[in-house]
Image 1: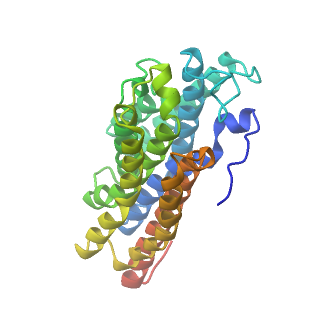
Image 2 (image 1 turned 30 degrees about the vertical axis):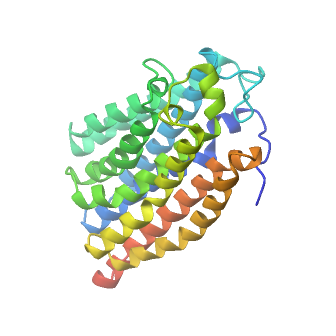
Image 3 (image 1 turned 90 degrees about the vertical axis):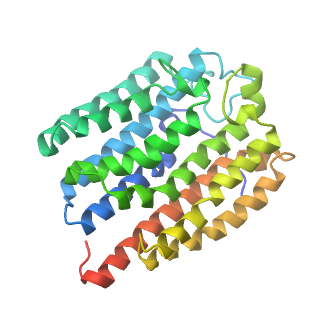
Length: 306
């Protein structure tokens, strides 16, 4: 099993670019279905993808800022986001960087309103609020709403918003196809909460995982990751998605590694740190394969591809 490499404190780590698949996969899902339905526009799609990445970056930056100013991150307990506790970066600089990401996203939103109408505004407001208020403002992370927010904001809202900005409507196919990925991206945060379980309880951070025992939190993490596979099988059997989406089952190899690591997490610090990156990897592999399978299936029917 690979070890978790020590982080290099600085702007690169603060932005966490390796986490951007969390925004990319939902946009890919919405884009793939919009292409199949005849609404696809490359320029709009790329702008939505940029906005998704900006929202994810804003959430990363503002989470670092919020955890620091609330005293959750300290020099004693923080090893993955040490920028502020070590003084490498200034709190005001990180805050401004996060707000800038939100501001640029809002500017793109003006283009989307011009392109498709005012209906997209609801998606934009919810997206910006979700990214901006995780640990800043109402700080819903501290009120045990992190997992719920990620499931709906990133797992459901983002693919639906991608489809809407190109079509002006909501797609049930997008909604249903998004469900497996919604559980997987929620599992990533569940892994984060499980990894930080003891530190969060000491700091008084309320999370859903914190209301459980550590073993219960770990079981929830494994359940969220594993839920994607039966859900995908149901979607294929119901012919909601083409059978070629079954190539996403290749990522079950990631699930096998993830489960083996999870069994050691309670007694191994390294295994505990691997909960998040292993979940990240499976989310990315599953999501890309799901979208590729969908497009392959549509090509087999229509004879055309992007």
